[in-house]
Amino acid sequence: MINPTIIKFDTLESTNDLLKTYYESFPDLTFVQTNFQTKGRGQFDHTWDSNKDENLLFSVLLKEAYANKRHQIKDIILNTLFTFFHEQKIKVHFKEPNDLFVGEEKICGILIETRYEETNLDYMIIGIGLNVNQLEFNGYRATSMKLIHQKDFEIDVIFTRLVDILINQLNGSN
Image (cartoon, rainbow, N blue to C red; front, side, top):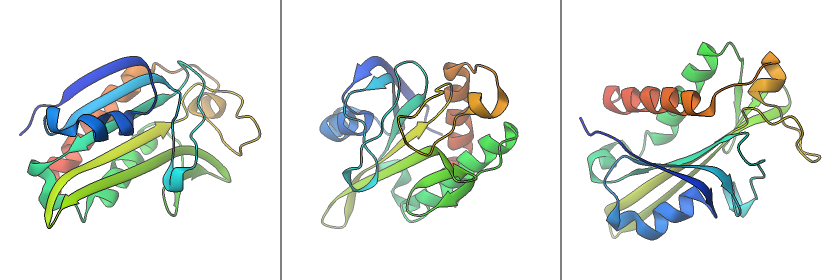
C-alpha cells in the first residue's frame, strides 16, 4: 500500500494544473489541496468558482501503481463520493459528464485528466471541488453542505475523510 503525500496551499491557480506541470516530481498518490483557486476549472474548460476558505478544492495524482485501474477510476471516484455523502446524510445523484447534484443544484464537480506516452500511462489527475460552507453562488444553481444542514463544517476533516475513503476504494477495487 502506498502512503499518500499531502501538500496544502493557501492559493493556487489550479490544483490539477500544478500536478500536470510537475507530475514527474511528485510520487504516486499525491494530493494537492488549496483554500482558493484563481483559475479553477471543470470539464471542457468551464470555470469552477469558489469562495476562499469555504470549499474543499483538491486533486490527486495517480501514476504507475494505479495504471491498471485507469478504466475504473471514474467509478472509484463516484463510489468514494457517494460513500462520503451517504455518511453525511446527503442524497446526491450523478449527472454526466462529471457533476454531483442534490435535486437540481450542483454540490460537487469532478475533473479527470490523463496523459499517455504511447500506451504507457504518465498520469491520471482527479480534481474535486466540493461545496462545503459557501452560501451564495453568483447565479449558479448550486448548494453546499452548510445550506443543506444549516451548520459549518471543518474542511480539513472532510478532506481527511475523503482521502481515507478514496484510498480504501483504490486498494479494494480490482
